[in-house]
Image (cartoon, rainbow, N blue to C red):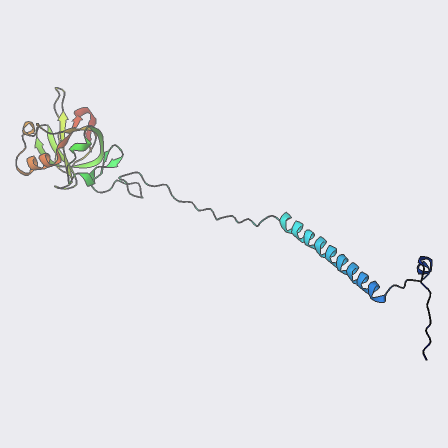
Length: 201
C-alpha cells in the first residue's frame, strides 16, 4: 500500500532565501567579450595612426631635366647665318621663291624685300629678271624718277625693297617677248622698285 507525502507550498519569502549561483560559463563568456572589445579598439587606433601618417607624407616630386633648343634661323637664311644660294626673297615674312613657279597675282599688292638676290638678265632699259633660275625668277621694274638707271649686269647680287603689283594689262608696256612675256603672263605680277631702293654689290 502506497503512502503519499504532501509537500508544503513554497512561499515568496522562501524563494528569496534560496541562493542564486552564477554559472562558470557566464564568467568565461563575459571575459571573452571584453577581450574582443579591447582587441577591436586597439586595431582601430593603430589603423587611424597609419592613415594619418600616410596622408601626412608628401608625394615624391620629380624634376624634369631642362633642355635648351637653339632659336630658329630667320626665314631664308642658313644655320650659319649666311644667305642661301640665290639670296633671300621675302613676301612680307614668307619665302617668295617657292611661289615663283606658279601664279602670284593673288598676293599683290604686298611688300617684297630682297637681299643678295642674283640678277639673271636685263629685259629692257628699266626692267630686269632676278632670282635663282628661269623657273624661280621675278620681273623687277625700276622707277628712275628722271635720273639715269644704275649700271646693271647679269650675275650681280642686289638688295632692294619694292611692291608686288598686278601685271594685268601691262605686259606690252615692258617690251617683253617670247618666254619672258609668257613668264610674266603666267605669274600675273611684277615688282615695282624705286631706283633709290635698289643696290648692287
